Image 1 (tube, rainbow, N blue to C red):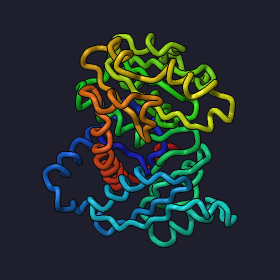
Image 2: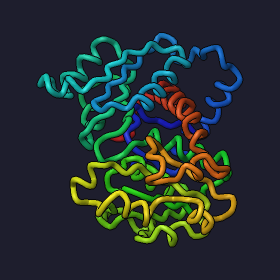
Image 3: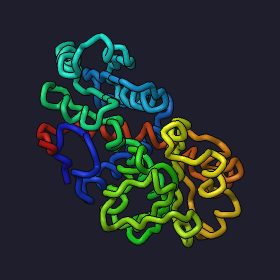
Image 4: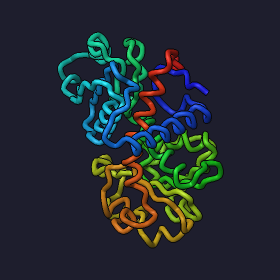
Length: 310
C-alpha cells in the first residue's frame, strides 16, 4: 500500500495498516543504515528539512537531523524557544520557514495541536515531534519498531506502561498505536497522574505488580520533579516505593519480558540501574531505532501529496 499523507501529526488518525506501513519502511531504512554505515542515500537530495523546537530536547532533534542527513537533505536548525517571546506567531514563523524553501518542518511545540495548526499555513510537510500533552508519534513508532523486532508481533501482547501517563505524550501515542495493532495495554501510576479518557481497551491499575503480571513488555516513564510542586505526588520516595520497576517487581512479568523507557531516564527513581542495564532491557535498541524511523517518515512523506489529516 502507499501511505498517502502529506503531514505526520499523530497516531490517533492512522489505521493499523498505515502504522504497519511506516514500520515496514523503517525496517528497510535500518537495513540501509547497517549496510552503508559511512555513506548517505540520495532519497532526499535537493530537499531541505527545518527543525523548529520550542522546547529543548537534543536527542530527538539530533535524531531527526541525522536521519535527514542520511537521506542527503539539507538541514536548517531553528532549535530555540526565543521566538515565543519575541511576539512572532507560529503562523508567521511557519510562513517564513516555508518561504526559505523548506520541504519539511519538524516541530516540537508546547501547545497541544500546534503542529496541526501550522499545516494550515505552510506548503511544507509538517512532522510532529511532540505537542503539549497530546502526542509524540515518531517516538512511539520507535518504541513499536523496537517491540516488533523482539516479539515479531503485536496481537495479544500484554504491555504495561508505568508512571506519569497524564503528562507523557509518548505514552498517549503508544496507547493509540498498541491498541490499534492488537496489544493489550495496562497502565499503572499515581491516581493523580492517570487521565480519565484512555478508552475502553486500556486496563487501569493503581498497583504496579498487578499491571506487570505476565507482561510481555514493560515501559516506564519519566517522573518530573515539578509534579511534587503541583501536589500531584506525595513524594519521590513514595513514588519509588509504589511504582519503581526493580528486579523484585520484574519477576512477576514473563521471563522473556522486554523493558523500555523513552527517556530521559531518572536512574533509581522510575527504574533501577539493575533493570536498565539488565538482559531484559532494550533501551539502547530504542535509541538506535530512532534514526531509522525518522528516515522512514521523511521518505514516506516525500512520496505523498495529500493531507490525510484534513
